[in-house]
Each structure stands twice: as structure tokens, then as C-alpha cells.
Length: 231
Length: 45
Image (cartoon, rainbow over all chains, first blue to last red; front, side, top):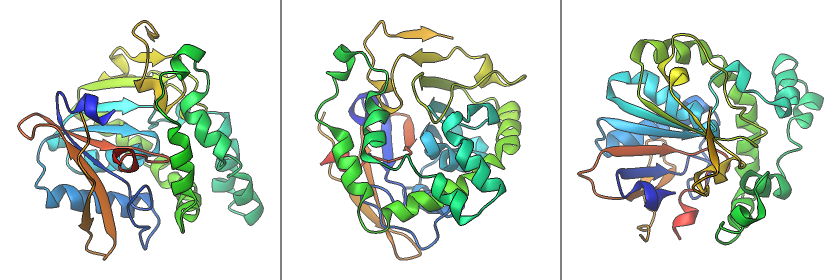
């Protein structure tokens, strides 16, 4: 994805703390991760920026956007939830854990941290000919990294702390209504985690045409030319 | 296009943050905030 974006933009792509090649941070929360990413942007003296958000990168990117809305040139939203209607059925256990944070309910939130689920983020719902365009097996490397020391704990902690992102949905909606950032919205319709959002009144993003792809989650940026449909 | 090697930045808390940059710095800047499982940098190997 980065090489294609880099044809039109100067791309900066961090591994969030506790992900990829970044160290596990001392505090496992989206607020702490957002502070770390803001530190990177300040270090690189980044001013105006388009922000691409994917998955729970939304909890970081939208926090940064709302903290400095005047610096946002636009949003590229890829299966990134910021609305209650975006919680698919797989969130039921998490929502229960948030309301009743017992050990038992916590254990029920994580059946998806498996190799199979990691692979399905790329392949779920893909026609064979589209699946064949995925180079290599990136989910193998994803799974290897997720099993490094402290990574699974990071994911468990962030599943719990995603509640803090949900608590900011009204703040995010107010930001979108006030600042009306230009937006490109891309969505893989087979993503079981972030459901394609319904319209919310007064929001330019929701008035904009979206592109819904017949793909899984990450792989929605690898479509064939006639594979998407406007919503 | 081949991606440049990942860079590392030491955060104020002492931990390392990995990131890649790509493209012409004179172009509009796109900051990518990828989620689970955040495959940005290891894809650059």
C-alpha cells in the first residue's frame, strides 16, 4: 500500500507502540500511544497532514486529528470505526466485558487472537482470483510478530482500552461536523470487526460517496478494478 | 518502488518507535495510522 500512496504523497507510517518493530510501551493505552505518535510527528516537524486510519488506528489517528484539527488536510478512512453502529457482532463479548470487567468476561473477549483470524483479515470473502493477487502470506509474519514478548498482552490491554475510544465517539462526531474534513472512505464489506457505518446527520464524511469493496479488511486496498460498488 | 529501511526514534519514555517514510517530501504528507496487527514496518523488509 505504501509504495502506491508514495506516488502521490510523502508517506510516514509508524508501527504503533507494541506493534511491528516498535517497542512495547510502558503504558498500554490508546492515549499513551497517541502521545507517542504525536511525539514522532513533532520530531519530524510535520505540519499539515492527511491522516490514513485503519482498524484501531482510528483510536490514535482521530485523537491526533481532534487535538490539532487545523493541521488536517483530510482523512483516508479504511475500515476504521468511530460510531456505535460500527460494532459488529464480534464485539458483543467486548461490550459485555466493558460493562462487567470480570476475568471471565475478559477471557471471552479474545477468541479472535488466533492465526486463523489474522489470516482472515486478508482473505475473508475474497474471490479466489483476488486472493491470488496477495503476494506471499503476510499473515504469517503478522502472527510471528504478534507472538513476540509482550505483544499479545498489548492487544489484550488495547481491547479493554478501546472503551476509551468509544467514549470519544461524540467528541469525534462533533469534530467532524465542525471541521468537515475532506475524506475518502474505503471499506471491505466482509470485515467482521468494523461494520460499514450508517449515515449520521450533518457530517460531510457521511454525505460523501463511499467505496465498499467485496473483500475482507486489510485487503480492500487490493481490489480488482470492477470490484467496488458505491454506497 | 522499494521501501526504504525502517527508521527508529527513541521516545521520551525511553522506548523505540519504528517507522518508514516513502515518497517525495515536496508532495502532500500522508500519515498512516494502521491498526491490528500493524504490519507497516515489517512489510518494508
